[in-house]
Length: 305
Image 1 (tube, one colour):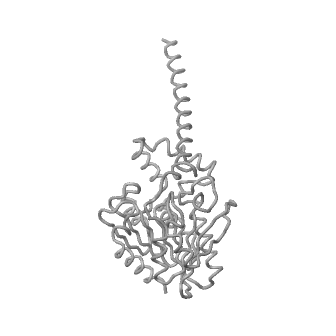
Image 2 (tube, rainbow, N blue to C red; image 1 turned 90 degrees about the vertical axis):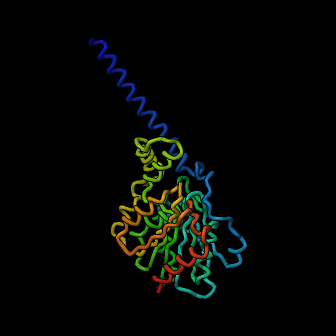
Image 3 (tube, rainbow, N blue to C red; image 1 turned 60 degrees about the horizontal axis):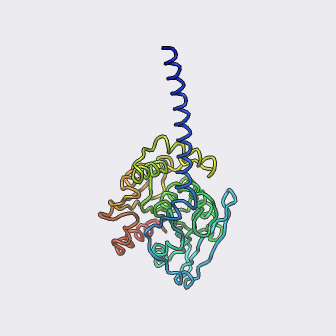
């Protein structure tokens, strides 16, 4: 009997060790797949349209350079308004995209008379970085770009707009933003990085989020140098007073519409929500361009002085 118990204990011990090793191995694979620059991001492209590169050159687009806190080189496109303006929109792209591919959204605000700054998030476009910031690192970089705009345009006003991961970056950045940020618009943003990653695990591989997601976060903290748990609108919108417009398609499978309602509940400030029937991920504008343009420009005009 003692021998049986002994072997049972040894078997259990090695099973636990094997499980831990398997979890660490799978966690590392998932980390590189989802957070690595050459992983899923190199394969995925958001449905935001094909950019017209001539439009940027025809509108005197400037390429700006900045440094992230960790020394990473950051790049942004700056499109000045046709007539002098002290109002600037910061337009932020999502996962697998870049600033140039945000042309359709940039045009909306530029046509309304605003300067537009469109950063390349870390690891995308012209910006450096080995690992994707999932909105967390990007939020810090957005605050830096806002300071750059304030330095270049003293006394000006800023508005924020983002899609998908860029929308989440906008919401995560709000506690850091200077007081001249007058409003924010988020289209298809997720409430938390942990929730989005867990949801994709379930959708793509039918794998539960525990224990893999916490393990992935160990690699995020160690290698990417941030904590993905900081990406959560429960934290960043809890005391927010910057007006927020939430836009989401109810047929979004990549970032389910429940995220929009969660963001709405989490936000403490003035807010508005628009759910578009039948629209998938970042498809609200393409489904009804005129209504979309009218709603976002009306919101901007409401809060820009």
